[in-house]
Length: 359
Image (tube, rainbow, N blue to C red):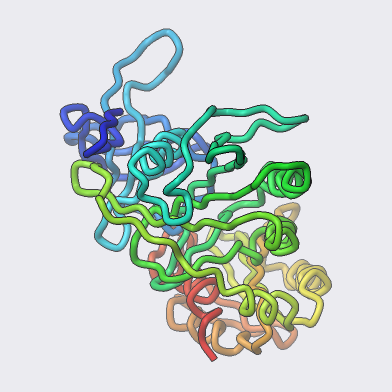
């Protein structure tokens, strides 16, 4: 990793190779094709990354070599999404932010300097302790790779650690410290940022409840083809009024399960109580004998104050191979997991992000 006043490279360009994503056997390992060979690479990112790690996605991989401490000689640094590199290496986020602070490129933090990295207070360790004269600011950094055309969101998987950090920052902000959470949005395309209240409503509510005591800084970052950080950054707007309206509406949930013939079935349910709807539909699915006994369907909640069930259902119908009706519910057959289909994944991203902004 190279840092200077004028440039920041996520990895030395001479160590960078292109790869094609094949599969992700576990959270921290991917199989990919490099120069015609199937290779395994370390993925330093615990997020779900479903909208990024699709079949045939181009990966930006560093060649690190083998040693006694690691099993692979490659590390996934970034992936291409919507035509541009998106940084996936979460361990680099703090160095990126430190470089931006050093070069006074974050609006609102121009007069702050880094006094300490990984500052411990109480039972938590925060990414930065910043200083501005006699003032001190505790800063926690989160890497955000989930975004639609206009809306970026965090997290893409439930984060109890993230919720804990927000709550402890809120407490410390009343003890003589300023506090902020910086979301490093790995794209300059979005205009807005909100916590992902579909995926992690507890984190979202913790951030919302703390908004008067903690500064929320969604900072955009864009990367060149050789993974050099762009000179331009921006701060996204946080439209809390959309969160207030959408979080407690009727909502709906997409349900996915594996069929007895190893195909995938998808259906959509809705209720004023999403959790109750999930349980009810799960029982109906079980009675329909569509899914392998003992397996659990996956529930994908979309929390909204609009009635979107029919619109989402029709979108899924257009992608499916076959449709049947069971107890008044429409079920759609897919020959493979819909999570491997870019069209399905982008639909989920749209209804969970950009659709929030539409009237």
